[in-house]
Length: 248
Ligand code: GLP
Image (cartoon, rainbow, N blue to C red; front, side):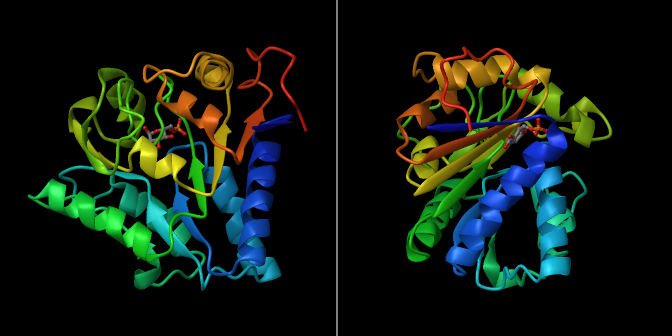
């Protein structure tokens, strides 16, 4: 595990963008996930700027969504599909075939989740999983209690997650109660994992993830066992870490 501590959100975003850009240059047909939430917005802004000003080329990259609210139309404002298209994929000129999205309206979730796993395998597997983290240690929508061997599936959201994400909706009642999410085994099966976290509100989840026991009660703690795991934090998110960590 490598832990990089940036001074603030802007520096965290630049470091994360540089990490991704470096991999895209080394492997133009990279297969990677695209996270949602407030955390990666700065990284997306940096990557869009690199695309526009330095010609960073994403035309060979394949993107997989990590998760999506179940039952929301992709076109609706609160969907992760809309979030990703508006904040990242359209500005970098991504074509439809390059972006794999969960079928959030499918009545047969078992079949669509299996198809998703097959698409990942067909693309040669995930080179890079980029992740944010929830206050309760969830990654994608793998809530506490999610099995470490879980695959893409329909999940129930916790009340904590629903209220944390309510800011993206008109009212908390509008937040869907279920989601489709890559599983923890899908995530840890990636060749590289990059986790981002900023702000004091994430400090406890970060400390439990990186230095606590490996337990399904803190889903992200499974990443401790990943052989190629990088974490980029701002100083507030790193504030509860013990000093013995290897810091770059
Ligand atoms: C949601 C997403 C997660 C994300 C988390 C943190 O629950 N499903 O993938 O990591 O929110 O979001 P934020 O960055 O807004 O704190």
